[in-house]
Image (tube, rainbow, N blue to C red; front, top):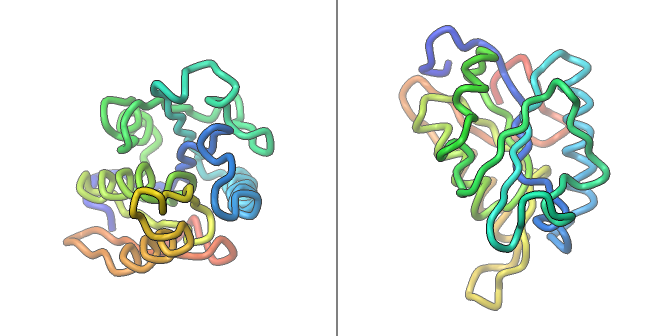
Length: 186
C-alpha cells in the first residue's frame, strides 16, 4: 500500500549492525542472531537485503569498530549504503538504491533503537514507504546515565508506538522475527 508508484517489492533494511555500534548493547547476541535469520530468510526468498553502515568521529570509516559484526556478512551483490546521520535516507544513496529495486516496503532491523532505527523508520514513512519494525531484531545501548529509560524500556516503547503508526496510503507496524512475511504487510 506504499504511496510510491511502481514499487511493489519489499527489502530487508539492516541498519548499523557494526562492531562499535552494538558492542555491549541490550540483548546483543539474540538481536544479531535474529537479524542473521532474517537475512538468510530474505536471501532464500529472493528479497533484497540492503545494508546501512554509519560513520562519524567515534566510528571512523575503515576502522575495526566501523565494520559489520563478524556474525553477519553482506553479500557481494547486496547494496551497502554509507551514512553520517541518524536517518538512513539523509544525504545517502538509499532512495536511489530502493527505487532501482522497485522497493516500496521496508522491513527494518538493527541499531540503535532510539536514534538510527527511529529516524529511519520515520524518514521512510514520510517518504511514502510502508515500514515494518522487527520488534526483537533491534537494540540500543544503556543511556540511563543521561536520563533515558533502561534499554529494554526504550525498545518496548519503540515497538509499541510503531505498532500504531498510521498515515494515508501507508502501513506501519511491528512484527516478531518468527512472524516476518516478506510477501505481505506486517
